[in-house]
Length: 387
Image (cartoon, rainbow, N blue to C red):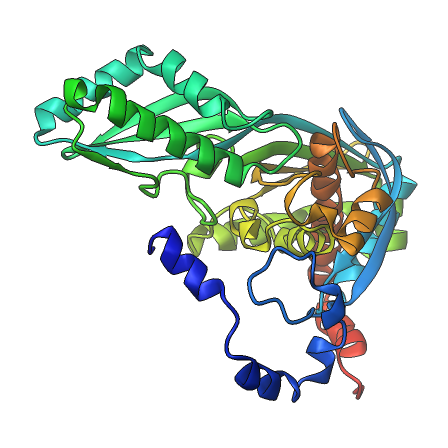
C-alpha cells in the first residue's frame, strides 16, 4: 500500500478525452452517471444493475427481530429466490423461524516488532495482564462516538507480537472504526512508550483479524454478529411443500455432512452464502465480507415419534451494519427498510433476519437434492429451452 498522496493520485479520474471516448461505448453502465455525485467510490461512472427478487414471506421470532417479512435478494442466479421462498413457505406453515444474535465483535490485529524473542515475550505478558488496555482503549475510542474496545488478545510469532483488538461498533459494521481506532492507539503507544517497551515499529494488520477471509479465527470469535436460527418442520409440511418426507430430508442432510467431512469442507451447509451475498448486495453491506459469513453450521434432528424435524443454522461471523457505509444509498436503504432493519438499534435484528432466510434456502435446496428435483428446477428456471 502506498502513502496517502499515492492513493489520492490514483483516485483522480483519467484524462477527459480518454475517459469520454471509453465511456461513450457503454450506455447501460453510464446511463445513470448523473446520479453519482454523492457516491463515495473513486472514479464512479455509473451503476451495475443487479436484479432484485423478493423471497418470502417468512415469520421470524427473534431476540431483536419479530414479524413477517419479504427479503429483497440481489442476484443474477435463477432458482435462488424461488428456492428461498419455498423454504420460507414450509417454515411459515409451521410457525416460522426463531433466531437469536449471540454476541458481536469487529477486529483489527496489528503486529509489533521487537529485536529479540525475549522482548516480544515480555511485551506479550504486559498485554495479557491488561496493563496497556486502559490507555489503548482511551486512545482508540477518541476516534469514534460508537467504537468501544472490548478486549486485546496477544499472540507471539517469532520476534513479533500480534495483538487482536476487538470492538463493539454500535449499528455500523465497523471495519473502518476498528481500523482508524487501532491505528491511532498503535501510533500513540509507539510514540509514548515504544522505547520503554522495546517496540521497533508496528504494522496495522498481520492477518489475524481475518478481514474478508475464511479462517478458524472467525469461528472461535466473531468478526461481526454471531447468530443462531432454528425451526421445526412437520412431516406433513415437508411432504406437501418440500416434496420430501421429514425422515428422508434428515437423511439427505446426513449424506451431505458425511461428504463434506471427507472433502474437508469448511462449515456444514449447502448454499447459505447465496442468501448472504444477495442480501449484502441489496442492503449495502461490504460484499467481500461474504467470505467471513460463509462459514455456517446446519444441524438436523429427527424425532421418530412425532416425525418432526428440528433444523438450526449457526453463523459465527456475520459482518453487517444498518447505518453507515453503503446502507445510506437510496436502493440499499429501501431494502433495509423493507426488513425493518434500517437505522439505529437494528443491527442484531438484521443478522437474525439473514440467518433465518439462509436457513430457509438451505432446507429447500437439500430437499431438491433429496427428492431428485434439483437438476429439473435449474433446467426449468435457468434455461430458456426445456427438455
